[in-house]
Length: 152
Image (cartoon, rainbow, N blue to C red; front, side):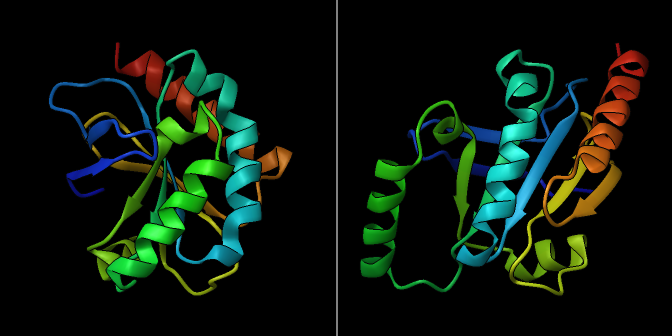
């Protein structure tokens, strides 16, 4: 299960997931270091049309636990300048529960992104990792389609 998570996107919007009584699939892409930015960007590219059309709750979670506050302000300022909409509204820095998220995704490589697909209640349906290949993206898209058809 993905934990109940609340956060603020880079654009300043408040989000919470999973949502009570939601039937919309949740697609999360987690990044634990700056080294996984390429993977994060490739997943965003693959699923941008899907989240723009509101077919999934899509969030990119970037781990910043342990970063000193004065450094964090500079990092966030740089991110806000470099990340454009609509991605900015889906990118959530997180500052706690790093160990939980790492266990959940079977973290072992700081250079890759980790992808989790859950149903509306937060039950994990599928996971993958690394860059977004066409095969991995197609597999997730098929799982999202199945979820959407069974949860209506």
